[in-house]
Length: 632
Image (cartoon, rainbow, N blue to C red; front, side, top):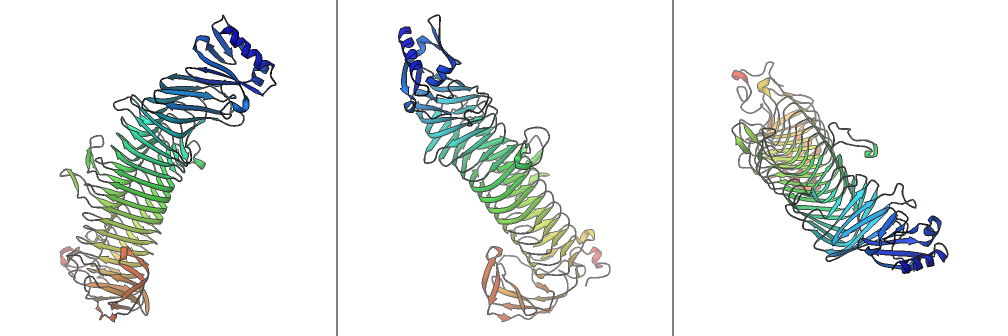
């Protein structure tokens, strides 16, 4: 054996540099050495007749199963590449000539452990590990301190005892799914692994192929750093914990991601350290706990109690994409926070900003929410449909979670977009602070207040329709200001009103502009100026056109709720006019209850508006004595 090896090596050293490659195969893989490197380094050495040293690699001669010389063109692996082929109970590792000195492979059956020790990028490129084949008892463990790429090129792999891919390298890892290939990774049950795919460092999921992942112990995909998604088709079919879990930030740029069968959240992003950096330029050194949704298609279904479709420890920023999230789990008691929690399709522990995209959100469990921001919620554009159908979750008489289609604990501002919010058993849209609408098309239906603010509520633009079947149409616990825009508010029967301000606390409704319809009337004590207010009777399910003088403001349909206010008040800055039985046309909005144009119809007789529900002595009028100074 020794004589044969010496002969082959001597042959290699006599051939023109770069023309031949020495291939050494052991149970742990195939190593390749170009003749040019061996000539320059004079690195083929025997020691004691038992080991062969080539460069930095030391082989036990008894472990060598094959050694041959091939032309460099026939060596089979591209530069900067390590190929790992799984075949049932075995795996074969083949290394390119220029990286074999920096990569150590250990193979046990079909379990492959790689250690990468290069100090610089090789030939101006990083090492790529290409995985293919099939095994029901295999894995890849990758260690080192350098960036690299792991390419899945038609791989079906199950590790019954641990993670399918376990990357302990803390540097940035690109996990690339080769175009045109389908890949499936499954881990084992009752293991100690954190995920089926785990990366201790930054994880970039990319490529144009398909990756299917099932996590049978904890998460499907987990990173101890950030995760980005681009181009690939990712199907997470099972996870005992989260579908995707990461720290620092999560960013989806494009691609298609489907998540179902998970035992906790669909996507969860935590703050890595104790203090947030906030969003940084190009996300360099960012540790924010933020979620950025910038494109692609995202379809998530979660079923666990109080689970979140997408959960951000920091902010959530949505600028584009087709986002479909469904939660079906009921509310639950959080013993750490000693509070009741409901499921949420989108949940930000801080602020949420939506500037684009199409969002279809539905929560069916008790206490569920479509959108929940613990901080401020800002909507400037996008198409949003948020629906909750569950009832209130009640842990005790004073520890509850109420369903809301859209809720923010901080100020809520809407300046654009198309929004449909529906909550059959509670508020449709609620801000625990101020609520301001300056633009967009906003429709809310609710069994409680259609829209509610815990403080002041201001409408100065846009198209706003609040439809309540059990309370006020639009409600402010502070002052209510209508300065412009096009507004329809529908309340249930008295004492509720179409547009309500907190008169119990000496707050008022101020109308100074816009075009307004209120079934159930305006709050008593309202201050109305800059226009004319009239009242009329109405018919359920009928279409009407509201005119500001001779100019159509909008066409609207009166809902057919079981219980509705007895009168309809209208306000415009000119003399209002109303037509019934019109045919809507042009732009459709308000979930089909509004049109920008209409034709036909017959004139409706308008009467002088006499005030809010019940007149003096009605709701919010202390002792029936009226508001000081009256209302005008």
